[in-house]
Image (cartoon, rainbow, N blue to C red):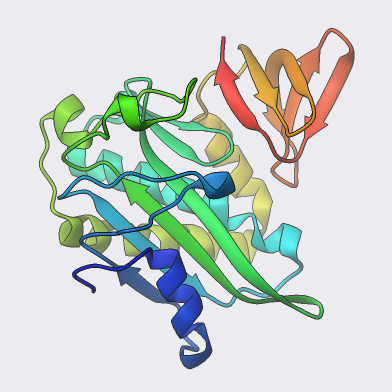
Length: 239
């Protein structure tokens, strides 16, 4: 546990060569936190930031399925601590929603080696007590919310991690034992806007369609006017 660090994912990369067992790295403050595609991640005091450093077997597409493991672990943790399951949902590819606003994000980073990855960093940020100023976010970003603000439940980071770590271990064991199928089923049961219209934007294209499912590799499947589209990576916007 650290008082402050540039980012927990960066710290995980620095210490990866010294650690052989899965290890959680938590910090009370981050000076250079980031989200997907290098975007800044604001962290007001009292919020949660941690990274799980692990060495999963498999090729990079299989290793990347830990984003769904992390999402389910976050969902279970938030429900267990708040007792308010109906308020939470999962947004593809890597966000947890609370009352329709963004509560938490997940960032996976890895280092490669022949035939797989040398390590995986599963970075997790949760707005426990305060949401970032919407004015600090990029245009079009989903409005942030906090657990305290939306549920009235106050949780300190140490207690959140104490619930999150075993929840992640449970879903990781399911993935390791039974494969992605039960993880996929559970994720879809908690998915936001399943069956509804959304827009997925990649670096070069935009797809407008009905959220049909995710496939057996975790890719988004949209039913569009031009047919069924399978999208491996994108930013999703609700219509």
